[in-house]
Length: 256
Image (cartoon, rainbow, N blue to C red; front, side, top):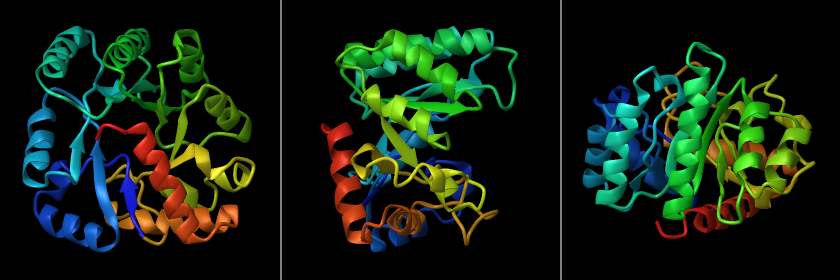
């Protein structure tokens, strides 16, 4: 079986001591691609270094995380726009809105998100959305900015069935990770109300490790654990989960 981790910060310094071993174990577990969302200007170099050392496995995106949007965010976006002109990236992201940690720069977050959406449209790339404590607000902006070409992933989806259906109606995918294994994660109420055709797998490594690794450093090697949970929630075999989510990943990242 093949799996794709559509969202992992494998370039994080938390992997500096054993990145090669982690990627080796991930590949042994069938995880043949790891898509890397960018966070800030500072994360670009380590992300591209991971791509260079693990070509064809570690695949970069370009974007500014909403928690890194500050008053001078335009300077960071200028650097990222230059990178988007210099070389190809698999997606725009991660971008979005975050009302969990700090609401100080929420207006700037919204402005940044709209700039990222324009990049996605101009480059014909998927957009990867962070929407912690801001699901409805993010859906609203995507609905307002929607065109036939705009597509992407609502990363780390942990919303309601109604929100899932709104996202699907917009032509976006749901990124499902370790939260699906949590007792109070809520996704048992979402599945099987939606089809696997609208889902991709992710870890958000090094964060949000699935049960039984919760509280420890997350890793792309745990993607099969999430697939097993989806198998249980949907009544599909793990082989079916693999086949369907792989096709979805290929469809959304079709050039990479």
